[in-house]
Length: 111
Ligand SMILES: [Zn+2]
Image 1 (tube, rainbow, N blue to C red):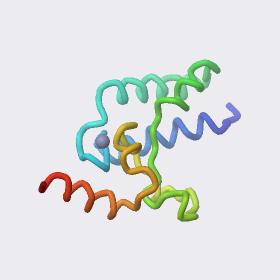
Image 2 (image 1 turned 30 degrees about the horizontal axis):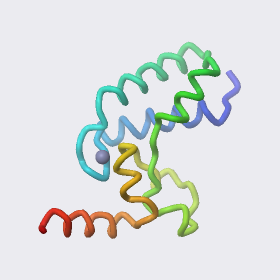
Image 3 (image 1 turned 45 degrees about the vertical axis):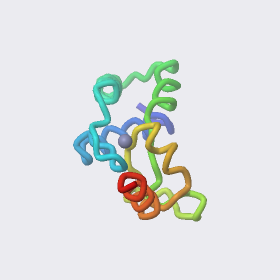
């Protein structure tokens, strides 16, 4: 199978998911069943070598990756710089650096 961007993204998401044990690196809570089911589903599709187009679209929407060092800072898409997160956690972090996000989170919790 000739691989497009979506297949690469799915493969990477599956690899990242395995590496992080299904834990969101921002809130340190499980990414959830929905996420693991989705990746299992895509894993099967990749193994069969067929990726139906509508499913690729779904993958693009649901697989949420965060850049540890935000893209705004101008860092390349290196594998070490990409982690899986919840959509909401990623939204809260925005373009902050990881350290900034953590210190802000601690401030909120200590109030
Ligand atoms: Zn989270």
